[in-house]
Length: 362
Picture 1 (spheres, helix red, strand yellow):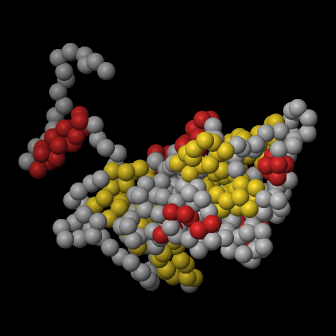
Picture 2 (cartoon, rainbow, N blue to C red):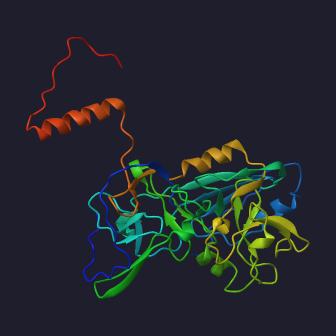
Picture 3 (cartoon, helix red, strand yellow):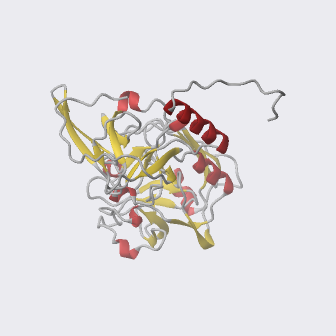
């Protein structure tokens, strides 16, 4: 449990007593030198698919990322999962006993967590993508968990938290002083990323909910044209928010999945790709659906990285609803046992467990 720094300056402070609960699964949520191994597998001759050729030409993979090409139409990417850019502190849903220092607009109560020690384990990433994508007859909605992989070594999530709010529009920050230094901790950091809860020893998955500005500034520069910065589950490339001339892409020009067919540095004649828009805090901040065909294997991998933290909506009489971590729903037996213990405690009775007259079944 982090110790609240002295001389803290609160931006938002809200507390509430729990009256009603609504359980949901929380989908929470840089730069460096390249360490990439590229080996092209055998196949029916040299790769000719333009998307495959573009992926094979990428050199801006992040530190700790390894890339191989088992076939002309497949790419395997492995990464440590450690974010290349992060702050000393971040904000995460406050657990029992943790001081609430800020609250998001939707009511998620947040506590300060130090990066060192705050994230005990980080999920490693390894997945194989189809790099010869084809459009499907109809789009497929993106879901919780990873929906793509960014070349920095972090995964991309869709725009939403499981509280049904858009992550980039539901941010909160907290500024404080500690040890003579000033710090700002945020729920969504300046890179548009944050970790999942990592409950139950499952580890934490650092992920983006929108354009990874810390990474695009390294790959593209401050105002340069966007290059390929990732791959979606359906195999189509992901770009930042600038067109081939360096102009900001208008979200109105994108389709329902945030896709567009236009020239890029890798495809001067134009090709279909996804865009993560700049300065967008709406549902269009990330990919809302897949235009191409999504394989079952890559989908299963992506689902493993989603957050397993349960959230509860708490509402005090006349107060504001709040989202806070909650215990998993109890079974009927567990609920009866808990009720019995609470009743015994209220009556000052010590519970005594009796031995059943016969062996119980499972």
